[in-house]
Length: 377
Ligand SMILES: Cc1cc2nc3c(=O)[nH]c(=O)nc-3n(C[C@H](O)[C@H](O)[C@H](O)COP(=O)(O)OP(=O)(O)OC[C@H]3O[C@@H](n4cnc5c(N)ncnc54)[C@H](O)[C@@H]3O)c2cc1C
Image (cartoon, rainbow, N blue to C red; front, side):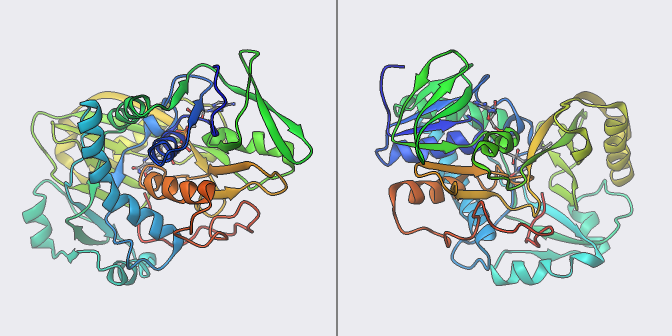
């Protein structure tokens, strides 16, 4: 760690790594520090659902970042594959969203964005997915819904960052900021070393809340445990992603079907799967697709989402600190928002015109109840 880069990123999950990759491509010298291995927390655990979107037609800043991801993910996937040889498994497999009566605001949002969808009759649903039992809700087919395999995408991002000269420091955690008035002069690391840069970006996921408290900044980022089960089936039982509010099935295209996910804020930082959690996921899957009853439970895992009070991330300058930005609180959507977040962070750090108003994700905003968005995963 000899150099003093332009920017130090604290936290190497999908948000920190994608931001580092985008900024380094724009000519910024970036170093990323993670207290453990890169990309092994929430970003590794996620299902990798990428909803469709059109950034030229979105109605809200949140949907704008999501839509930047929808159009950007196939491009980034191809670029990383070319650069690193790693295929992140990006697949436009389509999805079926089963809307409930309380989701009446969703279709108008899709229409505004000209997202392609088709309301399915019972017969049409059976034609698309022969193994679905009795559906609850109104099924809508979204042909442009896609997925990535998170661990592969992270491996590609890490390798891509290395190729373009990002300094990556694993097992080297942030301990505290060194200050001169309202300016950060360096970070004290868990290895005992001090790292310095002109600017700093906090992207430490669910652990960011405690770090910000030093500045009296308490946006409300908390861990929200999510469990996932993976089934091994003999045949391709499903073709499309099935979305039921917060629960979903993601067919991986190789016979595996991922079942997600629980939402357990009460677990705090206790990162563990539970028999009850996995049973609830299996019951959901078996009721919706009875053919999955014969499937083998291959494995289960979990992650701590960086929760926020309204489901929106916090992205922007940290109040009262001159050279610290944050990109945190991406809750259930950090993968789909990662590219849009990285673009917004690049604009903030380089002083460019931002793609969404600066106030959109401000850390000192009053985050109220859950926002209504076009997709909920
Ligand atoms: C079960 C589950 C399913 C999900 N499914 C989807 C999905 O389908 N689509 C979607 O878009 N999103 C999904 N998400 C949400 C998404 O995974 C998260 O929003 C996203 O991963 C957050 O990324 P992050 O980089 O902010 O956090 P993380 O991935 O948690 O990364 C934070 C990093 O900071 C590091 N760190 C912490 N403290 C320190 C410190 N003191 N010093 C240095 N480093 C530190 C950690 O080690 C970690 O590597 C899902 C999440 C879960 C758990």
